[in-house]
Length: 195
Image 1: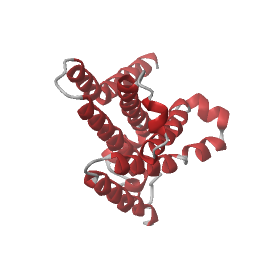
Image 2: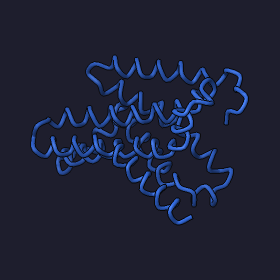
Image 3: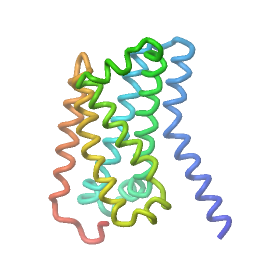
Image 4: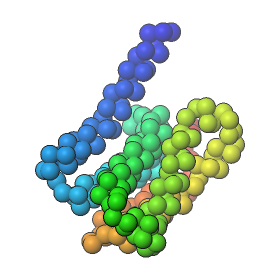
């Protein structure tokens, strides 16, 4: 039993290592000035949105790929994928604050719809990340599911933030359209044995 638990913990360590490796690479490049402030803001936002897309796409894909190994693997790690999305969003915010702090820009810029949508989305994701653990599930019970459904509100605000602040929002529109199409899979009749 102990061996199995240790093996599971080591496996989670490697999963988190895989998820955080791009972030470490981005940070090193930023510190060494290999990429600019604007580039690190863009790439951290892209990674956050990518993980968010995967996290939200897991359940719809289970409708059509219920027996695939990839589908089961994603389901097992869905919570970790969601937290990884928050990790890159937090990275995104920290870099923004580090650049703007002390100039009096943060509060003024927060009033702009492009930044306001991002801040509200981040606050929702912060609550979801804090409650993404088994203890929170036990304490909140059915309310946990209701709380975590606000991820869709946060997702809408995230894409609004991306579109309103991007010079070229084409990628945001493509990913948003793709996510809407994937979510339509929820209306497909569940296959026998799907969760």
